[in-house]
Length: 191
Image (cartoon, rainbow, N blue to C red; front, top):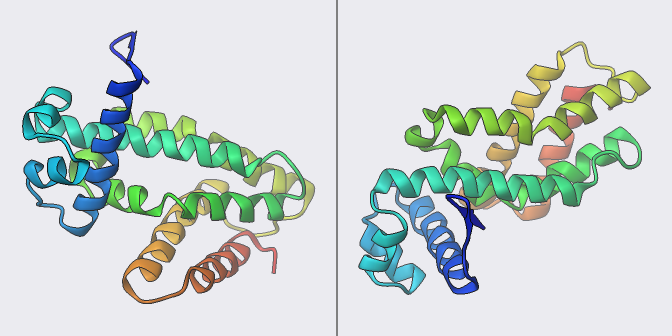
């Protein structure tokens, strides 16, 4: 990881990752949790957490970046340019579902949502999704009358809804993914 143009040592990068992972876990259960609870969950002292993130806002901004890093990795794993567009979109949905806790936390936090840099990076991060949707329409795999930009927005909300159903409504992972697949198929006109 690079911070202010310098590369962090392995220990610093692991500590930063532990803090971010703990923040996702703690804040997804309680948005108002104190930083001390996050430090405890990360197995670091409060002073260590404050060295990495002096203010709560710094941690929240880092969570937005963390979410986008996870999104980038999920989209690479999904291989959106390979195979039929509907299969690639299903792979992409399934990979993004796996980062549901981070996405749900970030999309539920007004501080992240009001950060212009987050939105700029998100629009470039999800370019593979837009390219995939456009390819699907060009190939005739997707036949919906809906615009690509609308389908893109609805796909993100569908993924978040699927994660919430899995996390809070006792859907199994399979049921949530099947519901996402069905909804996406209807959105894109691949039924």
